[in-house]
Length: 388
View 1 (cartoon, rainbow, N blue to C red):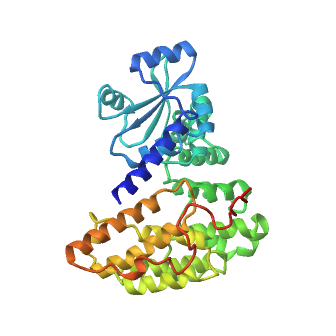
View 2 (cartoon, helix red, strand yellow; view 1 turned 60 degrees about the vertical axis):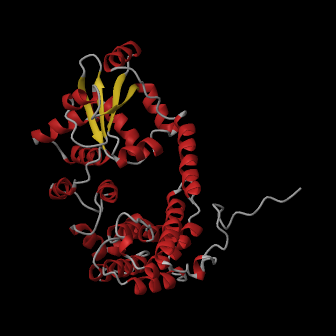
View 3 (cartoon, rainbow, N blue to C red; view 1 turned 30 degrees about the horizontal axis):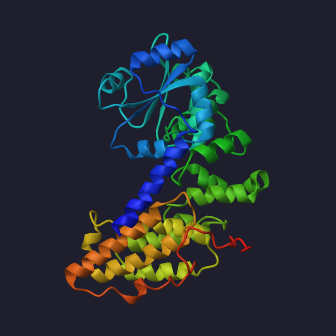
């Protein structure tokens, strides 16, 4: 079993190393050497400040930095550095540029070594590329935007750009500025403001979800049912049941209500009821099964060092049954974690069986009752290539 776990991570490391060749090419010299090189090549400097214990830092390094489209922008315009903020000259540089969170992305003018743009956080590639635009266009830089915002002398068009750039830079707390935009006369029915709302304002704890719900037909006419329903689904993903029930019918409402019910059962440690509901939802044709399985993966992770050691053997075995179901039914070849969790869950179950003298239930050896019947990474709609 340990060999299986090791193999999964070894494959992930190999894939990451291969992808890195087409992504950002990081310079590995000293700071002074990087400054000299940037001056020579007439580029600016990009610094990824990270720490060894930072999960989002590792995720960006494995999933975003290696992308060809990211490498194309960053290699062309910057001398790129990865600097551990807790080691060597990284300590002084982190202090110099005011680094207090990780990952932090700093863009520097090599001639003066002054900061021209600041960003950070775990983000999609599109936002990370937009960070580069902020460093290359003075009027999109965080330095310029922040100073103009502080002056108070701006119009709604500037505020739209400011809110968007704040979100791109990793600041998700932009609702007060969005509220100000509406106070300045902005309308949620304006396509530019609707787009900003969809992109930057999440959750249900704001007046805009109710605004959309109360004028549902109008918003559907303006922006289409698919777009409006998608926003309501996102906004109510973690909303109280009563709030979601008060809204008009939209695609995603039923799913969110069922997931809220499931979450409540797990939070109350009502495991038998929760797994019974999982069985019903796994057969429910009214919900997106791929989306459901992905959400279920959160509840089926087995972690002996957290609280799974408090489960009885019988409760643990039931949980492993659904860890297996998730592993069977997640087909994304880039998503290795459900298979890692399945391997560690089996290993822990075997360990507990040996320690407690228990028999592993027969259903652990059986094919899951729902979904795929074969454990592999192949999508069930993909046919086998004919033999020749």
